Image (cartoon, rainbow, N blue to C red; front, side):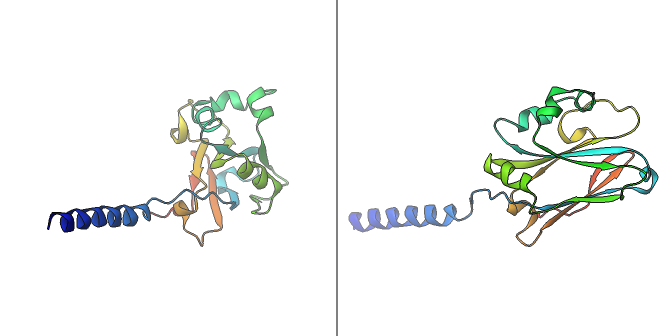
Length: 172
C-alpha cells in the first residue's frame, strides 16, 4: 500500500505542475498601429510626439526616470540617439497621425527585445518632471499581446493640454 500512495503522490504532483505551467505563458511582444490625435484645444499648435520601443533591461529604466524636460532640450544626446519615430503636429499638418504596424521601426524594436512602447510628447506650458507614467508627457505601454488581447491591432492615444491619454482599453 505504501508504494501505491507514493506513486499516487508523484502523479498528483506531476499533474499539478503540468496544469500550472499552462497559466504562466511567455510574453509575446507585437507591433501595433499607433494612432495619435491632438485634442481640440491643441489643434493648430506645434506639438512633437516621439514613439520608442524599449527593452526591459537596457532601455526601460532610463525611459522611466529620464527628465522629459531635458529630453526636449535642443541637441539633447538622449533624444538624438533614441531609435524613435517622430510625429510632428502643426497648423498645416493633420491632427491625427499614425505609426503603422508595418513601419520598419517595429522590426528594429522587436529585434532588440522591446517589450514596452514609450510615447513622449513636447507639450506647451511648464510641467514638473515625474517618474514613469506619473509624468503626463510620458506614456509607457506594454507590447505583450496578453495586455491588449490577440485581436487588438491599434493603440489610440489622445494628446491633451494636461498630458497623454490612452484611449484603447487594456485587457484585464
